[in-house]
Length: 400
Ligand code: HEC
Image (cartoon, rainbow, N blue to C red; front, top):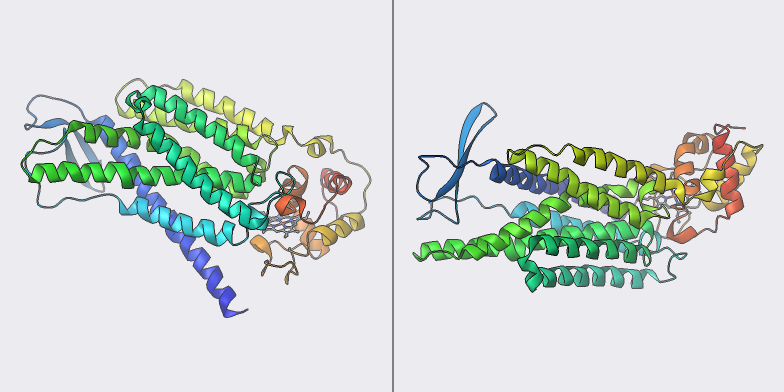
């Protein structure tokens, strides 16, 4: 083990650790404030400038929350801001994108059967995707369309569906999902960094100057905050999807992404309505369950090999030959593939026992989907061989 590898591995792990913690902090506080905002009630006797209050109990204490519409008359001495969670999520997320996807672009971002591009081209396209995608979103919000929340939401949604489709025509399924997730995440952080927080600062400045803050500032912040609220669940789906080839490597991956966007909105709508004290729209769960069933069906619908798999007589030796010819150059104790320093995900496929132990993984990655071999079938695993793997799995993955 070289020092460089040791450092790389730990840097990667630490980044992921911080990324997840920052993400929990950010999404947690954002869910909390959405809930708080919706649960505030107007009542008699509230102090001047207070639009509503709410009582909460947590951790052994009672809290009395009051929301000032626009702002209090004078600035409190101490004020807690919430932005570092969002910024840290972005910084660590972008570092991970570079460390994981850009450093191994040929394996992770490119799929030669989708589009024959080099790793460098894929990286440039990925960066361009983030910049252009975000600029279009920002442009839409600032255009006259931005005055109509519903119309903006509909156009924004259509734009995301287009991107989901477009990215799957450029990148590998894995790459397309991470690109879409990274773009949505970037837009969400940018909403905090470029609109919500700066507007809040302007409000504070106006207050300190003894002026009345412009209510439009708060309104714009609120609009972005609502966008973030509806995008939270899908973005997390995209981020954890890379462990599940049935989602990202399905032929219909972009439709799956679209349905996930819809589910994310529906589930948030359920909670938003409930928090606001209105009747909970239980139908959203029924529709989400239906969409989820469609997703499950779509995830294998495009896989002729998985669906045709019937038990037939194959020898384990055939399976072993296929795996050692197409997989074990990466999946071995000491991989021989350039750029792969250790067996990916700890998956070693270099002994009969190891192959049998990973039968399910082999099926999911190389039969039900074409996630492996990566990079768009880098080691040229032919369909006939996938069929042999399929039959072996259908037989219950027997050994010698
Ligand atoms: C070019 C190198 C390479 C080849 C060849 C390769 N893999 Fe992989 N494999 C990877 C990488 C990289 C990952 C880790 C993906 C990730 O980060 O999620 C991986 C992950 C896996 C996993 C674990 C997935 C998970 O998320 O737990 C399985 C199972 C797997 N590969 C099976 C196969 C099979 C079967 C073959 C041959 C048909 C194969 N691989 C060929 C590089 C390779």
